[in-house]
Length: 363
Length: 82
Image (cartoon, rainbow over all chains, first blue to last red; front, side):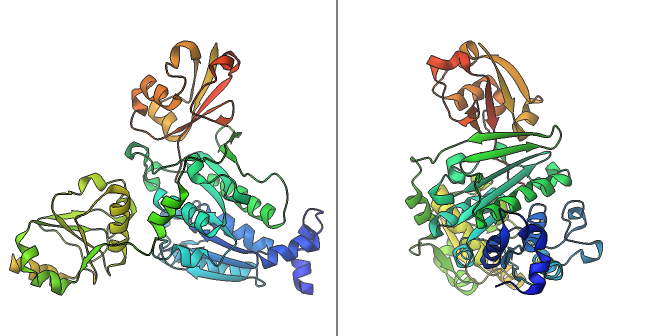
């Protein structure tokens, strides 16, 4: 039931025959999760909040950087360094005090995706990497959620709706993680600031159409937009029956995952392991402290571990570490499941300077 | 039997052009595998991931019976930016 103030707030869209009071109430009851509060996430969140989507979740572990501001329009210069998810929540609550917003200040991974996604009806993929895009797609299939997809590259953008009424999914379009040559670091490739605004607006529009049960949803259709030429193209695609979703989902989300682990104490005490040649793999992101530099150390952040997996040897024991043992576990699961590694050991309690010093002394 | 090929995103960048006219009969040697044909046609694509669409429909092959009617082939790389 909408209050008098809400009726005034949404009056211009309630006037639309396609929305009406019934549609507005549907929007209020809807639960939408937006993954990524960056270039695409900002317009998606703004329009969904303004449209009156009653329950919005925001997933982003990043902080605001000065280089984000030309396109991430929810943020201001004085908010540099602050959490995107938290600032977005604050701004959106000011924009629309009649809705509920939850901020998840974390990176979506195998260990938390299902728990977060299951609470929502529609998932909006505004992420900036393939790892998250495949994970979100597979989680959406597993939980039977509609996925509204948007992605950008320089002046071009793609929009589609996946898993809508058992329709095609992201893997029907792109079945597997791209080859290395196709991987581009977005922060290096550049993007025109207006483009995520346009593509994000298309995504928000699809979400509103889905909630208010309108026709012509972009399911089975990939829209490609070029901001240079203003050309839009549509590519039609069907569900790919050769994809074994059961296997993919089992690989991602099965609780029966077996992997080796050790603690720092155990590692120092294990005489047997000490005699083997051991390599350490640091999967923390660049710039995380403390930094280490020693023999037999490989640094491959989790965000690019699938691109760089060929650098990791398979013929020696590799101790994988991060700050707390969670991301290293995620890296091992990915590498074991998809790249046939059998030599990885998780350092369950994360890394510390003291441990590295003790390790060097033992050696 | 000329048809227009449109290249998108990173693929257009690698090739340094975003479209070309080709003769399907001679340019696409394996009509049952468009991806492979374009990887061989342009060495820059050999290690890249993309999908192909013929006249707006995602497919990896050409219907040889109707190939003279084909107007456009799109070469679609995935985008990840957000």
